[in-house]
Amino acid sequence: MRLLVIEDNPKVAGMIEQGLTEQGYQVDVVHKGFEGEAKAARGGYEAVVLDLMLPDRDGVDVCRNLRRRGTKTPILMLTALSETADKVAGLDAGADDYLTKPFEFDEFLARVRALLRRGEATEGTVLKYEDIQMDLAKRIVTRAGETVSLTPKEFSLLEYLMRNPNRVLGRTAIAEQVWDVDIGSDSNVIDVYISTLRRKIDKPFNKKLIHTVVGTGYVLGAEGAPA
Image (cartoon, rainbow, N blue to C red):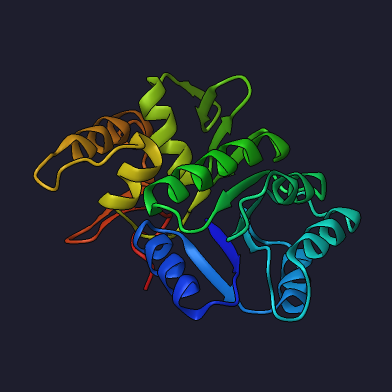
């Protein structure tokens, strides 16, 4: 998942970028409002983190203009201002959520995850990769036209893989996105779920799509791990 961070403070921007990257997200960072608005308007992001106070323009204006331009990407607004009027202004401009600085990074991550879940409702309801098809609304998975019965957690795990095809996903990122909790490094719960998912998705078919990248994680790909 690709996120855009529009934040002029290098220290804050760097902290956010590092933290999100460690969680498995792809992150683009810009420090000015006009540049950030242009990148966000071009699309390709699952969420935007937007600072209220930018050097060239107000974050509220950036947010308002993005909504006027038809950008539906979820926006989390950050600010050092804690007055209710400031929060109302940001939300009225089209922000989906608001977080006051300084903040705990765990709370920030929780809010980002909530925005991403909310944003899924505006996407197409069907994910496709190779001959796998996942209907998010009906909660039905098929491969080569055959229905595959999955538990809710297996469904979530496959959904995360299908939203990130041909990308190696580490165990930490999988735990954060699918389990939403910190799974200890000595736990094999992810490996167990990957194994059961393979038995259902891969074993009955000739072409294997779920691959292990030793020492790193897993990848959904027709040719295994990307070069």
